[in-house]
Length: 368
Image (cartoon, rainbow, N blue to C red; front, side, top):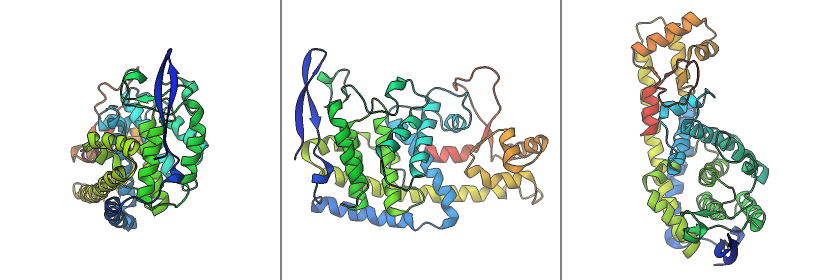
């Protein structure tokens, strides 16, 4: 398979570390894997052929991706707290960490150009901005041994390559990610598994590795928003982790097949979620048909897809209205159950608390 197992020292004892084969060495996956890839490509083609009018709702799927990716790492926070943390830096704790994941997803998918190590460092800084990680390890390759699944490397499920091998392995990954040696689905599967195997950062590898899937699919396919594959991973975390193990022990074929089948389901589910978002958004104006067409509430409703959490100052800025008019618009939409007061219990907010409202049905839909 081309990988190496090297002996390294950790706290006076030797441990075996896994150095993967270079991605440039992989040929085409086997027949079964390619059949799964073909089905995934068909589902992705339908997602790419998105009605331009649905671009804003489609971008909401990126929120689902960031939240699910964090949950895979056991970083959990209520959806509305995450929406608030995305707007209010005074909100800390897990909600702020998840919001950092959302911002890292946005940063990566805003970049259509080639991948570079400097971009990976930048995305890591965004991801870890509110974390407890030592600043010396943010936006830099790890300088110590890394492992997965265990309190020490001697009891770990996987011990990653030594720090002095990371730069060369990541240079190979970046070059492969910028090429077209394989179809987009196979390429995304291999880039993600290789990134997780190398484990190049001190923390945040799983979340950033999943961000790379979306970045690669968007760049290769030109889609507005790649399907939130982390949502599908979250439904079968055991299969996901087993697949990554098989990539290391048995080669890429079974991992690529599992990844492709999961990506196919993610694309199909994304289409259903998008239809539900569209139906919900269409129902909102029907709840305020008795108001004048130029009422602030009417003007605020279409903006909630991009701004699912608002306070009075946000409404003033979005609509260019006075604070009393903004309060009235919010009050009306709360009465008609388009908005609801945000529950900030456990938000870690000190001092005076700002009053926020959220498009609760929308956030509930994305969190299901």
